[in-house]
Length: 201
Image 1 (tube, helix red, strand yellow):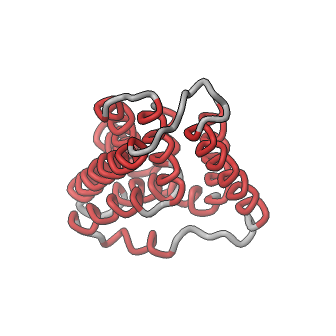
Image 2 (cartoon, one colour; image 1 turned 60 degrees about the horizontal axis):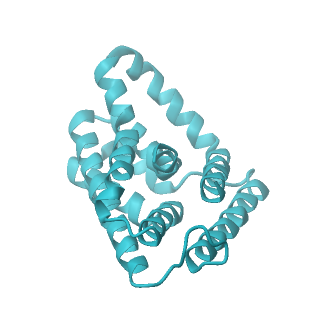
Image 3 (cartoon, one colour; image 1 turned 60 degrees about the vertical axis):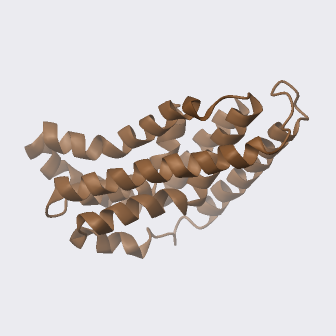
């Protein structure tokens, strides 16, 4: 669950969390963001689990089962995404909307938390994988709660760092934010690689 949660938050998602802890009213704004992430991860996973439960996905041990075929397709999409990021690495820039987050209020932060989970292709793929696995093993939705909790915990790390090590966090977070802005292509490739390993494993 933890690697899947890391994959969920890697990229613009964790960059948003870092920007929020460097913004004015950092705690209130970050809490709004975390609420959005929690709601989006719960709703998104529930939807994918519900849809997957409508189909007979076969035995997880059968490499030719429908559920495993779906996961192989996801692997293919991730490989294509990783190659695209490598080829375009010199020109890839972080999303322009990240630059507007410094002035966000808690309401906007909540909206961002919802959208960075529900609209990001990588997160949709992760939730599809979780939902498919749950449905294929006839697991109840409650089995997804550790994944959802781990996702929110990863999203909360910048805020926790700020609360526990305020001075160090204030000094370090802008540098972390700037590094992630200039290496977004590398982060995307790492996310794809982790996710591919998780699916095939």
